[in-house]
Image 1 (cartoon, each protein chain N blue to C red):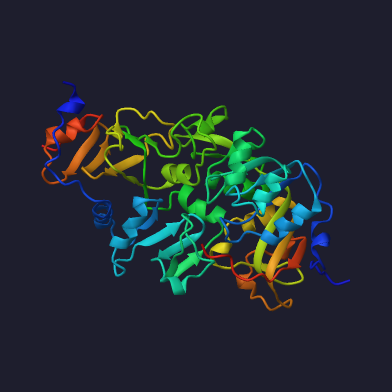
Image 2 (tube, helix red, strand yellow):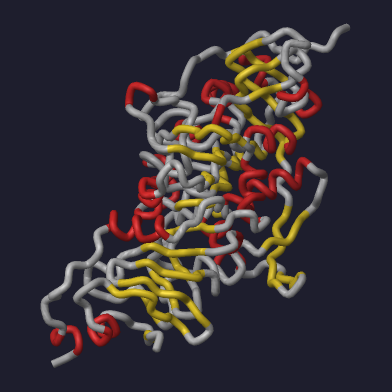
Length: 224
Length: 228
């Protein structure tokens, strides 16, 4: 029997996307300037209470992004990078695209959270194209964010829909940036990228170390 | 005669745009995009264009229409996979349009560099990725960087919120995006503005694009972008 068929039905409940977002939010201290990518990362903002002053940046030139407005209060001129309607918090500002990316590329953002297809245990991230010959590849701001922010955290499902680990020894997809990721939040656990590889910070309740490793391509290291 | 950058109509706004021009197109999605100027360009007839823009057009209007008429030879773009990019995808799959994918910050910086009179710059963005392949690399302060060239253009199409007769401009909220840097990077900068104000009415502290970067302004009070 091969490794895949040996895996028993999970006796644990993986963290929901909302829970993953909440775990990231818990780790963001007041005062940080933060860019959230499209997808699960966007949900992080919902879990940062407004009285903890975290300043969200959107790469189309919005600093101090606030929550989505009720439909009747939509400002059609105010969107985020995902082209969703947003609000501007008190103290927020608008800048043009070069200044907005200057904030990113100049290393002024404390944190960027992105989704990913794969993260390697040296910090490589692949999140923009699933093949070298992608028809009409779309990169947007991902490479700027991955290379430019002071910290890059990834939030993603631990495995693909067809059961492959997204925490890999080497990315198979084209890279977004090499050696950029500092931490990974998945539905199975939280992992730091360290010089020796992935170090496990926490595991979803009910999942053993061995079962976590069995679901992970890259070797995992556990704190003693 | 006093300076007056306002033009009377679209034909005057579009006069002289040549075949083979490189055109910078402001906007991020539908916000801050000069849709009426795009319609004017379609009407004007220039072809064999290179267009630099964040997204690759939606539906069959505006940029998508310009491409569908086979007037765009090449698109320089960061995210062609936006809402309903049917025309671009069809042309691209058929090999009928050239695509240069550029990271969004690199596109903004290339445009800004042109406006600042720089020839090129080095950036860490895209190092180690397919986009940096074949480009010159150099290490600065221990960090590997890749050479990117300024993107100088013949024409910029800009959407502003307010304009006066000197071509001083303000923008509306997230409608600013690429517009100010594009206005600065083209030989001929053409603006459509929602509102016309008297010279002196704009607070000098609030002018985002000073008139030196602007050549022609057309008053197009079309209202708000559509809500999706």
